[in-house]
Length: 84
Image 1 (tube, rainbow, N blue to C red):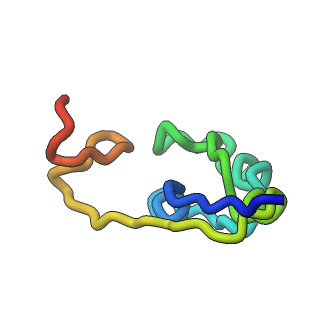
Image 2: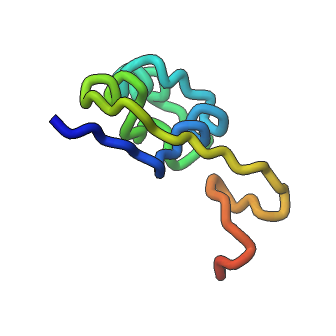
């Protein structure tokens, strides 16, 4: 079996921005976020460390960008180069 190396996961972003515990399953996070409406992504997570373990992904890179108030746009973050 080939090892999968994922270097484009938003694990750190999801953990910090949504205050998610990535050591529990996707189902558990969705259950905890049921009825929350502070962010559009609530209850729509797609991945946690549990799923990575099940898929036998041995390595992933969790990138975290620093926050800058002027770049915040209702639940999303944009770089200076993005239009809108």
